[in-house]
Length: 407
Image (cartoon, rainbow, N blue to C red; front, top):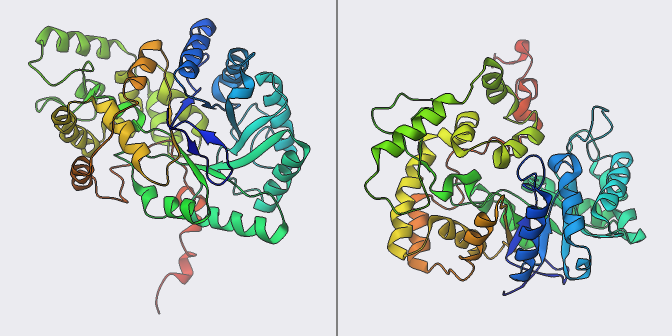
């Protein structure tokens, strides 16, 4: 394993970080198997683990804590808070009141007395950034947190936070955790340059584009009806060869057997664009099969994204590598990216990820990818990505009716 420095912290971490979102009820409820997955990742040289308080309502942190018993000092442990942990309106967000409580809760669940990297899971428009940084600074100075970071923070807010820290003498964010993959390269335009300018480490999530870059979700058959679950093909992790029609029919029947209620449709249309990222992130990696997720998330059936996946498959085949390995190697090839998060649910998922550790993409392959998805652009958008307030609230982007005319 070739370790990299996490920004300018001096902390050395592996290019693959083990994401713990799938450990617990939302993914793999077998604690024993989850612990074995963690141990195998550590034995392979991965020394960076990322979890969060809301992953399976704290169960993920408990599993990670049990797995690290006797090995804690050799692991860079990261966790996050912000998303709701209960019905109380103060059990969420980036206020001092909640941050102090959330850290104590995470320390207890993780079975440790310090957190290497504590991150704000999302920006909080309701809380002054000075309030957040002040609380985090106290936690660092108390020794309970070693360093701090943000997640899915827009470039402008990254800069503002850096300036506030300098002006007030607070600890500054040392890392940023944005989404990044071949299909979602928008952060190359501003976020990653800001990461480099201020010496932050970048720990990117969803390098497999929510599972689309596994090759298991394929472009619809031409004759299939549009915008339905059966409109998406499910394949094995194998090169494109002659398909067995019985397998396709079996997949179609399994798909049709999955219930789709009006409530499910409302959830997809209303909640996912940003009102409940806790459910969106949890469901993305854990709830049901790829086909069920394809029916729940808009980006999974985005024809533009499916088309690019079809174009990437022969690129991977020509290079003699799996599509998953192409995607991971792409994510960690950017000079601003410190680590990419893998989120295995099963031992087979981890084995597949580890098999691609030594894959290196030459300039010719990266040039081909640039032609398919130009640098700094997104092919569609992940449902669980962060939306700023003006995106969610029309009144913030519309003048009062009586002031909209030019005359």
